Image (cartoon, each protein chain N blue to C red):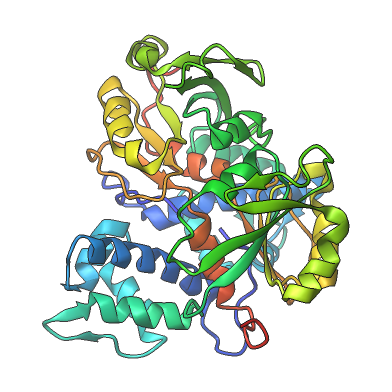
Length: 217
Length: 217
């Protein structure tokens, strides 16, 4: 759930932008299953979103479907990837080489979805120099230089909550514009920087609404 | 982003339910900062959601604000926690004691937000019996018995993608009704089971829309 300000230039609400990757994931899954076409109703049923909402969201970006035949899955995937600027691979840095940093560096869900983890930073001398999934852990002393030299725009923040804001300040000063924060705290950043929060509790709290707790406690 | 079917009983759209935990997190942050009251406009600015949307979402559940004075932060927190069934602590099991399982068991963002991780399961004999954050890693052979005995309703699925569906089947058969899936695959479950997907790529793809990629590639 990203806390991103509405896009003032195009006037497309951020909440609409936030749904596009969800559509993209569902469409990619359909594509893997061999589906060639789909409809807003079918997509809506899979995602628990109304078909009218899906049509309205997509209409911000053009005409993608045809009356009667619906959406061409592969074409819509391609268009959504262009809209979300995923036509190239974004190189990503992981900050923090603890359990979570290790998990992120080992995660194979980034492949073919627009991102590649290329750097991992940590302060712990016993970690620096070790290799995770082909990536050598670098010292945090090299953070700013590497970000500037490599034009790193995106970072995954996997440091303890107590360090999250100070590391964020360093990332932003060095040129990072998108941070996915795994620490359970809210970060303060300038307007041009986009923060996403990876917060399992928000998702669990969504589920508990639906779970019968009668025999639980 | 949970793929949960719309709530048929109350007719409140799932997308509305999904925003309540986001409101709850923002309100809890305001409460920590010492704020006693807030408004739908202030909340909306923080979250990039229109104030009208927030008022409409909350109106599904009753009257929480007063014209002119807005919302009483602590009262609204209490009401949202009741709606989301967070008035008791939900005990949670982690499946998989790899890097991610270790990270989840060490994560302190669950505290005071309605959840407590109490069990961790793995198949690896070298992991079983080890203690993470006070919790002893149990064998997957004990999975079904423990779920049934302890009435475990919620699990965090941190196993490799190739095992995610078969482990899910076991969880569901044993009585689990809510699964937060960290593996990058879609799971098939019966209607009464709620699946959430923790997918960093969906959040990164949301960000890249806003990032100028001109000098990136």
